[in-house]
Amino acid sequence: MSVNIVVKDMGLDYAIRGGGRKGGKLTALDGVSLEVKQGEFLSVVGPSGCGKSTLLYILAGLIRKSRGTVLINGREITGPALDRGIVMQGYALFPWRTVQRNVEFGLEVKGTPKAARRRKALEYLESVGLSDFAQRYPYELSGGMKQRVAIVRALAYDPDILLMDEPFAAVDEQTREMLHEELLRIWEATHKTIIFVTHSIDEAVFLSDRVAVMSAGPGAIKRIIDVNLRRPRAGGAVKASVDFSVLRNRVWRLLQNMPDSEREGAAPADSDISDVISDSATL
Image (cartoon, rainbow, N blue to C red; front, top):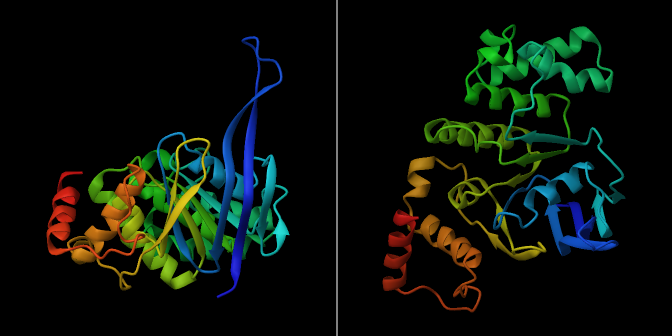
């Protein structure tokens, strides 16, 4: 599998103004290095304020890095481009456009003829069960419906990479579970490269091929954990498994700055497995 995204020794500084600190700076990210393979589903977790979303916006071309290298398909990122789609937690749908015309937006920017973009939009809405809502407006949809529209809008113009910033944070737990299944179905069908920022350890482990754990600010990649859970994944069965609980606990321990026993080569004993399951039930 070829490498799609390469981040090497990347950092971001913000200038500090006022308070007698003229010329000072705040380092948000420092020494971030990461490689993401084509077609991979990578989640990024970390403490609040560690720069998870900032990293995503640099990859989207919305923020410029201060130093280091950020390449997509061997080319330096200089700004937003149609090879990347982005989905945010606030949906970011245009309230004056119908659902169908929201999905068509990227295709319009791409210069797709009207009939073709209408056909494509309806195909994507059909794929997520929203074809009957094509002529509705965003205010007429539930939170879960809006998020499905945001996802297919990002996919409709066929970007290579999908960047997702806590896209399910604003929906209830039942809707979130449904959207997890929907996103995995779409990913398995399209083979897009996905980078998914989340605060939820369960969400990260369930969805991903790998989980990147970031350290507190200035943010950096502390560890990347392989998620060797069989696909396709059914929520209830996977999350009830011991393997899921062990992986979840590894991520949690890294976020809590606790030793990672697997990294040190020690396989968990039976008593450790019980502790893992107990921890998972209470977190």
